[in-house]
Length: 147
Image 1 (cartoon, rainbow, N blue to C red):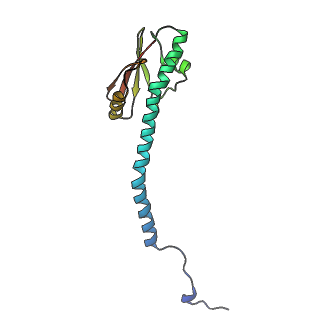
Image 2 (cartoon, rainbow, N blue to C red; image 1 turned 60 degrees about the vertical axis):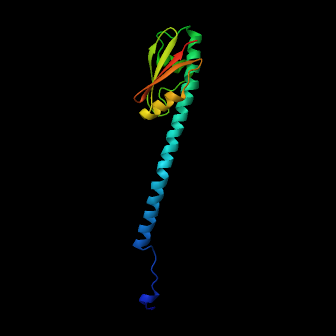
Image 3 (tube, rainbow, N blue to C red; image 1 turned 180 degrees about the horizontal axis):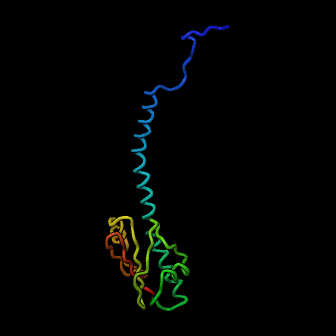
């Protein structure tokens, strides 16, 4: 029978100090990388919102005007049906049709922060289909022309 000595037994595994160092390094990397990941996600949502406001809503309004020659009494459901819009914006919040007249349709578009609503309001210029964009808190009131 073979006798085992303490010196012949090989210990395997990591020491507590090695595990603590690895956990610390992972924590530092997470602290550095996570803010950048969340910021890029927010920038993507902001860009998608700008596309929805500048392209998708005017296209939906144009599609709606094929069936009815004015914006008076139009609803969110009509815009969704005629333009293929989603009921939420890229931030996951519900937008609404807040007012309509014969020649205009106002969309209340929520953002994740008042700063983003204000930034979008300044980035949007008046165009053929967009009359104005007015930030109020986290919401942006966008008035579209119905032509």
